[in-house]
Length: 155
Image (cartoon, one colour):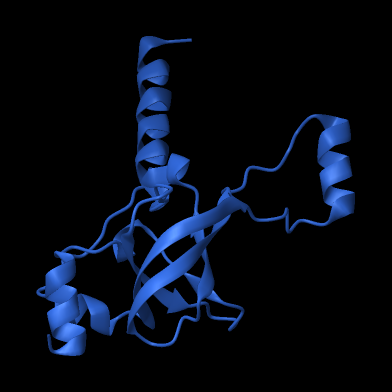
């Protein structure tokens, strides 16, 4: 293969790779705690009581097929983390609320994990299908708890 042909092929490959979408989490900065809280359906302070992966939504036949061929389909690992609500700041999340999110091992695609035993501020939004609440790295609080509390409760 000539040097010119190799160079052209490498150049074409570089253009193709540059055109592929990149998986990266890019979050917009909110101008205030009030502005960030406005985008959430529920805001609360809570503690993790349980966390685990969401069941495989591909169906049993696809799972068996993937296992048999040794080629499982790539998919994002999602978790459901259930929180005990200590203080509701917006909405009515209930005493315990499950929140769906991409696993924190996938932070490049806005995944997030939550520490056990610590009180954390959660901003979550209703899922499009109405099946519950979800959050992501972009929904993590950008301001101190006191600013959210002041904006939402007037304290």
